[in-house]
Image (tube, rainbow over all chains, first blue to last red; front, side, top):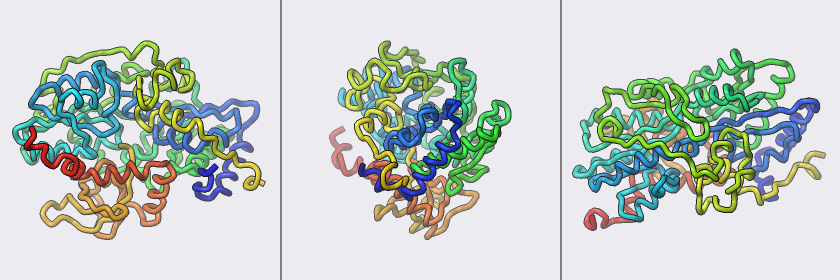
Length: 375
Length: 102
């Protein structure tokens, strides 16, 4: 009720809603995936689903870095942190993500030196300030954060700072989209493309989705109007039987991306042959590893890592929710055993996780644009 | 973590050319400009910041838009907390004597 006042240009939003209804063929059911967790958050917060006709369904994609990280990687990272000489650093989003023996925050409560940093550059600063300790940065994220980790490693190397390392969990978005399209139980008609990842990689890497798979992609901003406009653009293409890559978020995303950021990533990282994703399983060439020329700063090359593989708690259905096969509320634990306060699965931790977004905003019934606005 | 925070460059660091002071709604912190080396921003330019690194140059109008987006998404407080935390300032505030205790 109050959210609608905060919308920019409510009359344009109402128009976009009308246009979506006009474009959607009532004989068809459209399944549109928003790849990015930031979009998932916005869609729930603004109740955008309520502005869409029933036959335009939004499927939540894998673009939440905390959510797709399998528990074994958290266990591996925390096993190194047990070393009394270690300082384990990570972004705040990671702190409540459960590992087998607890989250980083629970390790901290038990005496492990765990610290929140807001930038990898600050993990490096911590290493400078604590020359008698080893500072490890537990890096997560898609191409939005990977260049910052890479540049931090270049700075560490240039300084010759030896008491610093990165436990690298960076993943790349394109192979995840490919895995979803290859999955036999998924049918997607088009993609709302990620905004900030595209700032780095640009729009070209999505071309194969349109040319080889025949699916439209629209890179989108994060406001309600942006997302609705992107859905309009997708439906227009579908109606014309077209499939091209379009950029709705031109004010921030250059078509070519950020070449300097891509160079920095290429200097430091190479593709892993394969990497495990929660819910999606092993995906080839879907994650970044630190090159041998930076081995000194790679926690996995420098220390012995157990290489744990852990299956998720049986009752939790994170995998199905991540793939878009189940809605958050269809998981057996949702809202009962698993809440944002006591998360069982990672999708309930991050604000970009679809379970947390759904949980936090399900009680808010935003105004469906009817009475005074649409008329 | 995936927040894109708009800031205005108010000062370039004389010693470290890749660092600059940005102003985000009155909070000033150092960020790294190294990922914009192909088109380095100058004082007065607006940038979008991700985890302490400027990632793209934007217009002043887009910066205002972006700040409003963060507010609409209920993320502006998280964004300000992130900015205040740059440079480990949160550490120093929370545990001024932590080094001695250890």
